[in-house]
Image (cartoon, rainbow, N blue to C red; front, side, top):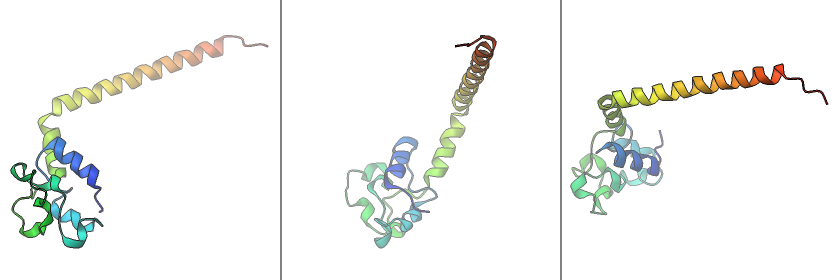
Length: 117
């Protein structure tokens, strides 16, 4: 699968040290990085992020980049914050139910009124 640079970089910055969806090899399908088997700088380990050449080396031999995928990092983050994710999902469900009830009441009100011109 082709991985978008901005999307992966954003996930990396948000959820921890990771590279690609499954791993650095995901970048081999990308037209920018795949030609020379390199990775974006966002894949570099924290201590090497300031080095602009960090991701330029072939990922299979580069010990400066993260070797775990962002999918694993994201799932770990969700698991460790499951209470907050559950509360957020519950609030969204309650809001949708309230909107459904209000819409139904509004429809009933409109049907009960006589709109003769």
